Image (cartoon, rainbow, N blue to C red; front, top):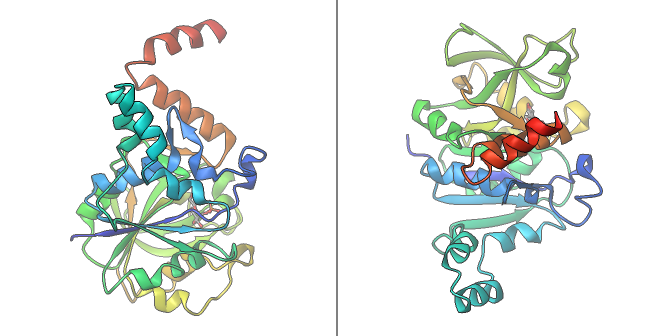
Length: 284
Ligand code: G1P
C-alpha cells in the first residue's frame, strides 16, 4: 500500500523542557546536530512519504523556517566555499508544495491535532509521526507501511508496569508475533486497569474514517480529545494492528530519554564515537 502523506503534530507546549522551550519549539531540540523534527521527517521520507503536514501552533515558526531556504546563511557559506556545510543546511529542502502547515488553535489533545489536518487528507490512509518518540534507524514507519493492508496500525513496545499510565495501552492476540491484532486500547490507564504493558509509541498508519470519529470532539483522559479513543472506537469495524518496534526508542519528551538519545546517536557516529567513549570511560 502506498502511503503518501504524514502528519506531524508539533503544536505541544513542551512544558517538560522549560525554560529551554519558552521561545523555541521542543521539536527543534537537537540530538547531536539535528533537530528532533528533522529525524521524524527523514524517517517519513525514507518510507516514501511525499507530503509532510505539520500541525503547529503559536510560537512554532522556527519549524517552518527550518524546512525552507535561509538565503543569508546559504549565500555566506557559498561565498566561503563551504560546500559540505552548505549541503547540510539545504538537505531538508524538498520540491515546492511538499510541506504544509495547519494551526491547532488550542492544546486540546493529540486527536484534536490530527483532526485539524482533515482537509489535507483525501480518502487515503496516512501516517502520523510523533517527533518526541525517536526510534533508532529511522525505518519504523517504513516497516509499518510494508505490513499495512487496511484499517489502523500503531507501533507498540513493552514498558515497565509502573509506566503504563503515561501511554496508550493495548491488548493483543498472539503477543509473540511482530504484527498483532489489537482487541482493546485504552489511553493512560491506571496500573490496576491496564490490560497489558504493551504501549503505543508515536507511529501510526490510520484509515481516514478516523476523522468521522474525531469530528465528534469527545473528550477522554486528561479531558483531551484522544487519538487512542478514536482508534479504539473503530476496533471491530476496521482491522486494528500493533506493530512491535524492533529498534531502540528514546522518549525525547523526557530529560533522561533526551540525554540517552544524544549519547546513543553520538556513539553511533564515526566523527564522535572514539573521543566520546574515552571521555565517558573517564567520568564514570
Ligand atoms: C501520546 C499518545 C499515547 C502514546 C504516546 C507515545 O501521549 O496519546 O497513546 O502512548 O503519545 O509517546 P503523550 O505522550 O502525548 O501524552
